[in-house]
Image 1 (cartoon, one colour):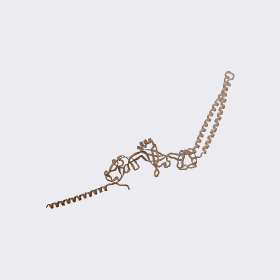
Image 2 (cartoon, one colour):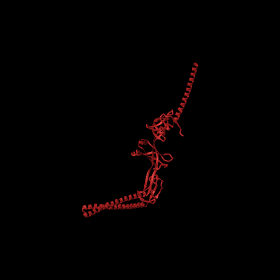
Image 3 (cartoon, rainbow, N blue to C red):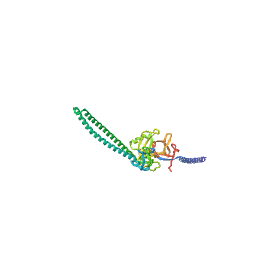
Image 4 (cartoon, rainbow, N blue to C red):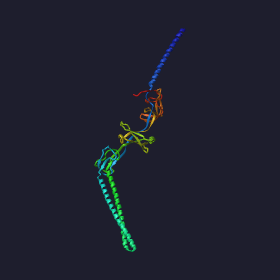
Length: 403
């Protein structure tokens, strides 16, 4: 009976041992399956490291190229167009001859005015000679008048002779005054003649139409032989393109910073040309308008460019970038890392255990494909740049590499 009990106990122990081993094996297998399932549930993402670098603070806009100076050339005298001394689209220098109006009528007018001057100059000399002769006669008559006056007072000559001498003296003095008036009139005529000569010379000079500055000619609007009127038809438009302006507008909120930087010195402005593989043109801020446009809330600015290579063209649209300052050791992340939620912008930060944390951030300026982070991240942290749509705070992630 005791042996039966012992045999029965041994059998139960064996069964219990077998069941324990089976349970352990089953638990291990389930644990492995759970781990594998968890690994299969990890969201694939792409990541980038939070970095520090120098970031320029820039303002960008679409700008329009404007000629430094524009002149609509007209003739200041009427006449036939005798010469055209340039071709359309040619670069011309200041004071170079562009057109010539037939000068012959104005040369004749000048010659006539000079002849009138010569005639009136002769008349002045003649009048001055008459004045000199009458002044001498008047002086003699005054002496005779004085002598007869003394004789008349002594009773030597009758009063009639004294009166005749007095009348002769007075007449000669009046003649002298008339002669002097004639001299003044002749001198006035000389001044009129000189003014006519100056006007004739000016009109003759206007026959030769010259470039007001270094520039580039546009379309020729008249042809040789055409008769033009004074200050009427535009003959040609010249644009000065060296240097040249680029106009652009910025929001009024940027005005205080722009004025502050401009007061300290040169503000660099770059102009990039669409479909042009060359580098941006370099210029400087030269003008800030005196009022904000209330309709658009923007203010007009101008940059001036040397344009030595002639790449900028009046009326052309360009991409303008104005650099205000450079931030040293700015914390930056790729633009793709930024997400927007109800509480504002945030990023997913990958923690050492390969789970993610939703981190709110304060963003600054954008430079290319990078965004400055003013608050919320530290250099060296890892942020998710692709795959955020499958993530929630605490989610497990698996980092994948770009193809």
